Length: 229
Length: 229
Image 1 (cartoon, each protein chain N blue to C red):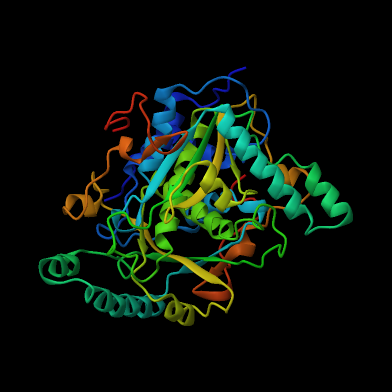
Image 2: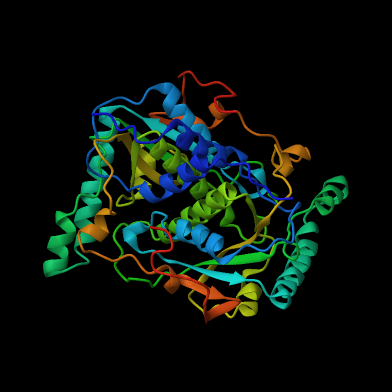
């Protein structure tokens, strides 16, 4: 028996969300995200796969400008620190990039991981402890794609010191901040990721990341560089 | 200006994939996944967000029964080991669960993380080194949802010793195995996740995982337990 329970438009929607999703730093509008929409997106995140069904995530929804401003300060500090690892033209380029939209985005969300939820024995986590964190990342990607389908952009800010972020958001010891996200309606989504468009790095051909049966054994299927779009 | 570039059917498709995706261990059919379909799904994975656009993933496609059989052995060994952490009824229940579909699924995929790709300086990774791994997990979730839209089930096997898996798949030092996935067409997707249906754990109400402005501050929006479905 063949499963074919998606209409062509529904299937197209999934690929469309995946290919047109962007890590958004600019183009946020001031339009608020209403509760129904926000909760639809967060419920989509909550329905991610999780190791042993442990659902080890929390979402801190931030709308307060004061809280955002304190996080923005952490970003500025960390940007300065990280830029010292680069020199000359590369440093100049790095500092010229728009790397966050903390204040512009009406909603910020901190996604955290709780290693103790339903523990200590979580099915599948005893062999690979990191799978708890991996589950939280799957939830983040669900959130990102659901937001995209709603016309809402999401940007992940990882230039920040997590210990200081924990203080600002009063996150207790033992809980791991995984992502700090900026969310809001946008005027547009770029066709091409920012860092690719800016010439920072190029998209790898799909064939370059595939192996067959064993590591190092190139896949010689009908791989082409533009398998998708 | 409002962004509303998804048709209702397209948006519905995204939520449908998210809510009907399952961690599949049973119901695989022997139907092969053709190259075009497999590459569409892998290209969707390849278009995940990645920290600093580092695209740090590889996908080892496994179809060989011999290779699968060796991985299955690793699973059996690790299942035995991990079951010793449980006692009595809980142990009996654990061992009765169907936790993998390695041999039944026509395609297995090992997803790996390469910390050295485009390094050492990767934008956004200098503050939080784990973001490289997080990117790989986002790719896995893209793969999972694209597969779902194609009527293909995916199961994540994490009851396995990664050092031994590395040997079987000849994965070099420095490359991190992140996920071992079983993929194939299925006769059906369960309505409810296996571990929830089996009474192992329950789905948390969405409200239980939300906070507002700070950790510990409950969100009093229009949260309901069935915000989605």
